Image (cartoon, rainbow, N blue to C red):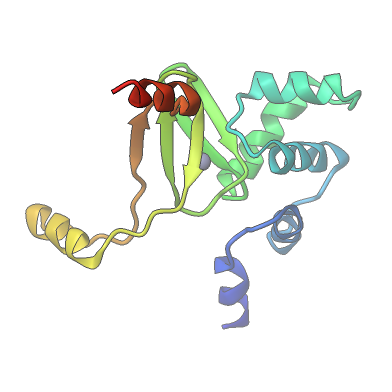
Length: 156
Ligand SMILES: [Zn+2]
C-alpha cells in the first residue's frame, strides 16, 4: 500500500524527480542530475541535441551518448516526458498526463493541465465504447500580439 502511494505520486519538482529515481533504484549519476536540472530550469520541450548543446554551453561535462542514454532511461521510467514529433523526439519535465498548446507562429509547445467536464468524457465513451482513463489534448493557435491587436481594435 505504502509502495503504491510512492509510485503514483506525481512529480512536481526537481526534488520529486530525483526522489523518484531513487525509489525506482536508478542511480542518480552526475550526468543524470544535469539533465533533470536543465529540464526543470528550462520548463520547455527540448530535443536531445538542444539538451546536449545547452549543457555544454553551461560547461557541463557530458557526452552525446550519455545524453541520449539518460534521456531514454528517464523517459522509459516515466520520470520525464517524451513526445514523438515528425521532426524528432522532444523531452519535457512534466511526466504526468497533461495537454499541449502548439503555437503555430513561434513553434513553441506549452504545457497546460486541462480537466474535461464529465459529460464530455461520457460522450467520448458512448461514441467509442472505450472506457476513458486518461487523456491529453493538443491545442493549436497563435500567440496573441497584445499591443498590435489593441491598437487595431481602437481604430474601429
Ligand atoms: Zn509536455
